[in-house]
Amino acid sequence: MEVKDCLVSAPGKAILHGEHAVVHGKVALAVSLNLRTYLRLKATSDNKVCINLPNIETFVSWDLTKLKHLAHDFCGKREEAQPMDAELVRRLREFMGVTNGNLDSCNTATLAFLYIYISLFKSRELPSLTVSVWSELPTGAGLGSSAAYSVCLAAALLCASGSISTPLKEFDHTARWCQEDLELINSWAFQGEMIIHGNPSGVDNAVGTWGGMLRFFAGKIIPLSRVPLLRILLTNTKIPRSTKVLVAGVKDKINKFPSILTPVLDSVDAISCMCEKVLSQMTSEPITGEHYNILEELIDINQHHLNVMGVGHPALDTLCRVTLAKGLHSKLTGAGGGGCGISLLRPEMDSSVVQNVIQDLRDCGFDCWETSIGGPGVQQHSLFFVKVEVLEVLNRY
Ligand SMILES: Nc1ncnc2c1ncn2[C@@H]1O[C@H](COP(=O)(O)OP(=O)(O)OP(=O)(O)O)[C@@H](O)[C@H]1O
Ligand SMILES: C[C@@](O)(CCO)CC(=O)[O-]
Ligand SMILES: [Mg+2]
Image: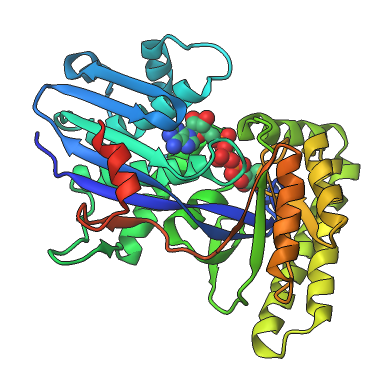
């Protein structure tokens, strides 16, 4: 079977409030970033499937004949994301020679790809293709790199399998899918996240799919259309961590001390709700210093809660201390345990002050940059209009 080539991208995200608590049914507020993951899918004729993942130095190729026997009897409609197919995961892990324990980043990314690829094509002939992925996001740092990767895989492989159409018309630079197709992309991206995270809430893949700012609660996604323009500083402490391990750790703590942790999760829920209310007020009345005072206090309280959940790190404490010395309030974002933090910048803050803070943070060995938020969700791109830097990397494979 021959498939159509395509180039897609999906944004990373920052969680303003609600990480971890959202896994336990509480509200989270999340926003897309202007940093994206790009995936190029090319049809080939050598009867091979290749994946090139330069961000994690993973380059693998399989003969189609070796993959064919992995697909097993299957009921249900192919294009609908089914509950996780444990038998397929077992077979894939056996095939990859990783039957026990946690996988490393290369095996995790490979397993997520193979799972979606085989699930979408298994009732038919597996196509020969090459998938290359390049991301502007740091991987495993709290900015939703796994979700952006999963959303790109889902969008490109659903297009390749003919389950959704490619929305790009002849003279378009970029194009997006209709709501129904986005829901299908999101549901398959969630499967990718299940492989990578173990027990994802679905908030990260929802932001990667729809973009913008959204409220996520018990699987429900509510886009927030009226939000003020926020200036956010992103800092990567560069301490490596795994979302899967951190999410499992919080679960263990809740099981061990339910009466202690439950009020903490409820408090995080209330923080998300209050933050949403203040953000909405900021769009309907003149913005005052008091709005920012509340947003800053919410950030401080939530950072303490996240420490109580056991997902802090000394490097994140340093980030909070260094930024507070210049009047900025910070919290970790995403799963924590290292990775990235966000600091809220007040609109009147002079760029020289911001540059000073950035320098202080760089002196600690961190990466730091001001970011714009609210970028578009998953998109298809024309090869003629995509950023040259991205094309240059993807063209190497
Ligand atoms: N560009 C990429 N290429 C290949 N694999 C990727 C890429 N980005 C992410 N991944 C996969 O996702 C894993 C990182 O996922 P993880 O959920 O731990 O971190 P994150 O998504 O960056 O942070 P968070 O979940 O806290 O937002 C990597 O180890 C890798 O398996
Ligand atoms: C830690 C977590 O809440 C956010 C990771 O970005 C996990 C999840 O929601 O799946
Ligand atoms: Mg992730």
